[in-house]
Image 1 (cartoon, rainbow, N blue to C red):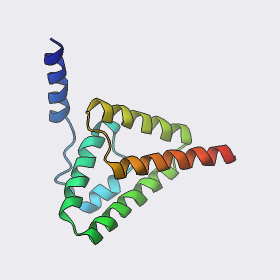
Image 2: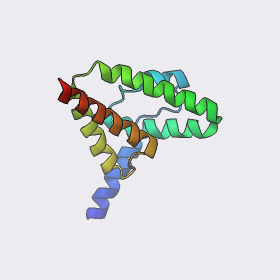
Image 3: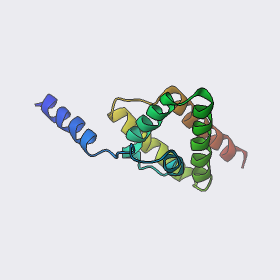
Image 4: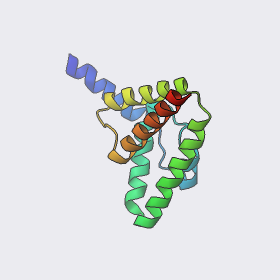
Length: 122
């Protein structure tokens, strides 16, 4: 019974996750930091797929633009809202058993650490 329920959950998450394959690179960049936590795995998968097809230079520039846009969005958030978002994302990633790719995990951890350090200084 548990396997059936777990299978249904996994299948529904696959069927109802957002599809970013039709989006342009610029669209993906502009969406950075605004994706609903439940759609983060699909978003990261699409970014990873595209990065793997790029040259190292193009991939580095693309990821830098994604990160810059994400930071613009996060800079406007209150720390408590940012932490709540990160917690929701971590929960979704754990439920999907995907985990973060190392570069995204490292990036997210740096954002959390930076914000924690800023709030301690105030």
